[in-house]
Amino acid sequence: MGDDSRANEGGSARGRRGPIVRACLLPYVAWATAVLGLLTVLQFVVGRVVTDRVHVIQYIWWTPPSWSVLSAWGLLLVSWVSGWVSLRSKGLMLRPLLLLGCLGMTGWVLLGEWSVHRYVTGSGGSAQRAGTDSVRVLHWNLSASKVREGGYWSRMLDDEPDIVLIANARFGSDLRMILQSTSPLAPADELVEAKRRYKVPGRPGHFLITHRGLIASRLPITRAGVVSSGPLVNTDNESRASGEHGWVIFAEFERGEGGEPLVVWFVDLPSDPLTSRMESMRVMRDAIDAWDGRTLVPNETGWDSIPGADVFPTPDLVIGDFNALRGSASLDTIAPGYRDAFGLAGRGPGRSWVPNGQNRLLRQPLKLSSWHIDLALAAPGWDVLGYELVNPRRGPHRVQIVELAPAR
Image 1: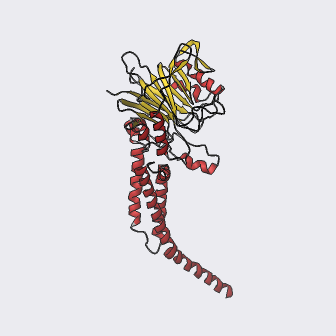
Image 2: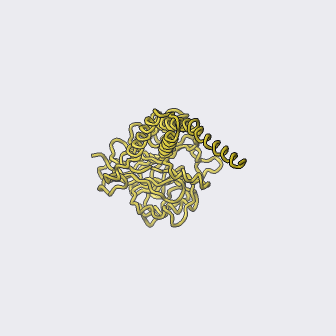
């Protein structure tokens, strides 16, 4: 009898705990998860309205949209299940609002930011050659990653670029390997200097290394110049440019008889996450406006540096690692009125920078990230015919390829 009595008491206690959980705990779980879901929607909206105009808000803006969307849907599911099981309703009016928020976020991301409708229409992505007027530009921030034989750099010309822009390659053998791989863009028997101690078998005026950027082109480079938001060289080793500051290289390309020159700004801006992106853009813009006019012009064996009085030329294309997300307000400081190439011809999540997490658990959410910081901005006088991101399987940055032609 004693054992049966204790068993009945235990069963009664468990029976009482069930209603208590359903009546007291689960209603608050349903309410709290609905509130958290609505806060997630609010964070998403605030990030897209303010972007990086305000320093504190820029960190909200940097939250990958897939994280926000999946979190909001997950919180809605938990809230709905908890509310359905609960004996008391709590947060009942919040769940329909959260559902509308989840639907709105999902639609905005898929159609507005990722342009998935272009997969259906067949538009966007890489473009076929549109004629002799089109120019294909390839940009890759190596971010000091080690170049290895057989890597993407050895087959990058399969993408048929007219202009190749490589940022932050390691000095020494790595830089020489890349020069050799791009030499077919303008081959020749004679050697020319792309930079002191860096020679390539190519035609004069087609290969240039300055600051931390390498330019190789089928089109002749008629002149070039560089500005930086800090020292142009590392004072400890003048053969290495300083990587602590943002820089912009302009290059003017000859496009053939009757064609206006193509001016490209090749950029690499500071990556310090604690820095206000709006402020770093203003500093860079001030440096551009204060350019000293020193210009690089080609000669028969390399490059001459000459003084000049011209202003930094107006670009047709601004391309590089901005370290600011696509759609950021700060981009208007550098290139006001310019149009994002991905927005015109891209599709998909737009993952241009995917950090290599060492921890296996941390790597999983990184796979859902979509930090698009390697960008291409086209002037209003140019049509963007194609834009794609290519995974080189080396380093955190993707290769971006943009094809453009004069507007008709």
